[in-house]
Amino acid sequence: MLGVGVRGRGCGTGRRLTVAAIRGGQGPASPSVEVSGVEREEPGVERERIMSETIVVGVSESPVSRRAVDWAIGRAVERRLGMELVSVVGGAVGVVGEKDVLEAAIRDTRERLDEHVRRASDAGIQASGRVETGDPVSVLLEASKNAALLVIGSDYRGPDAGPARGVHGIRIAAAASSPVVVVPDVDLGDRRGIVVGVDGSEVSERALAFAAQEADRFGEPLIAVCVWTPLTAHLHGATVRSEVYLTNMQALAEESLALSLAGIAGLYPDLQVERHAERGYPSQVINRHAATARLAVVGTHGRGAVGRFLLGSISQEVLTRLVTTTAVVR
Image 1 (cartoon, rainbow, N blue to C red):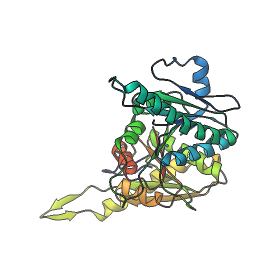
Image 2: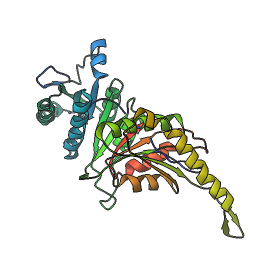
Image 3: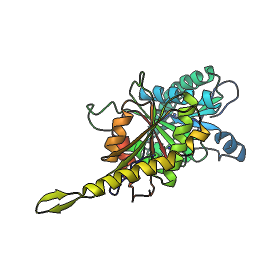
């Protein structure tokens, strides 16, 4: 989601499915799993074509991987896309006796991955899985190059559950070639709405397009949020803000939001749209709206009409305190 403001930051947007398992192909009607690492084949043109119509999902032994795969299955069925599940077994350093341990880890990972591939195949999806060895971040970033969408899970359980999610997801979301969806280990229950930040920048437009398509496809309301953060001045120890300045900033945010949404009604005439132009700190406002939503959409960078938006920082803050499934778009 995106924020708008002179000292604001914001967030933003996605496309297909590949599944990756961190310790974790394509196939015809029946599921398939391939193991690669030491003797990995270079992807060919045909593989790249197929992958561009695929959702890639990162799968690990963490329970949240089931939620990530379930989310990807829903999108793959609706969009008629394929799925690839990728698991990565890492940590090999070449010490004596390591081979047997590595082979056992690969077998265990492959069995776990097989179960997810079968679930996707049972849903009528052309699904495959592969187990890689190496660095999970590097493997998933490479997989994102030809994916419509990269889906990963996060074991973050809410603001009272201790430290936020690890660095892997943030690094993947920041550097992936495709849009990235981060699925938290949270029951979304009867939540409704697709929240998206809007600031008039190009990345905001892509985020809005992604969010509007998701909202229309799944019959959810689109919740467009523009956040502005005022400059502050101090005189004799007191904070000074002109009421005229604050009024104009609010009006500018409302105008920016209206301009961004101007074409949405024509594209999606039945889409319900909620507009929120608010003063505050972007990540806090985003998370407040997203706390009751099924999906939040954030961008990684951009410049809006009001000023500079440090969207990278805001999107990271949103990801470190996940309140719902979040799509990161560039």
